[in-house]
View 1: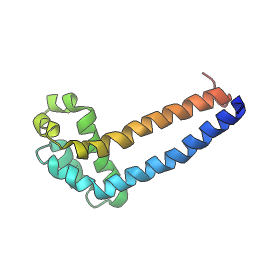
View 2 (view 1 turned 120 degrees about the vertical axis):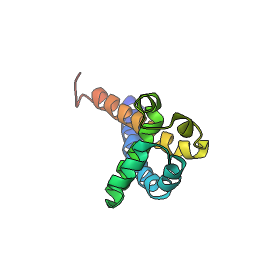
View 3 (view 1 turned 90 degrees about the horizontal axis):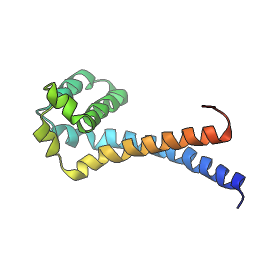
View 4 (view 1 turned 90 degrees about the vertical axis):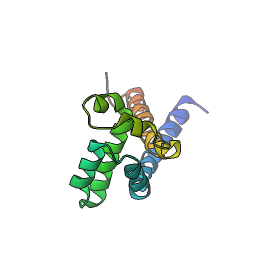
Length: 126
């Protein structure tokens, strides 16, 4: 397999995985958001976003999922400002945390891979 074929296969894999990851985000927002929010009842950030975005449909669910994810990713910052209960965030079951971590980290990996492939193809320059 020559380098062009490897490059094309890499682009195809990334192009297929990005929409799959987007669908995973939609699935998590639809089926795992309520258990996550129930585990974070003392977090002002989560309760305020739920109150504000509750009637906004799919977009609201994605925004609420983003707030829940920020509780995990920026725990110290939000705890310092009194917006989350750090102990409660740490007590969230690992199986629920995985539904937040995996799609977000996969998204970071896929965006990074896309940028690397774009630079390698010469479509963008640094």
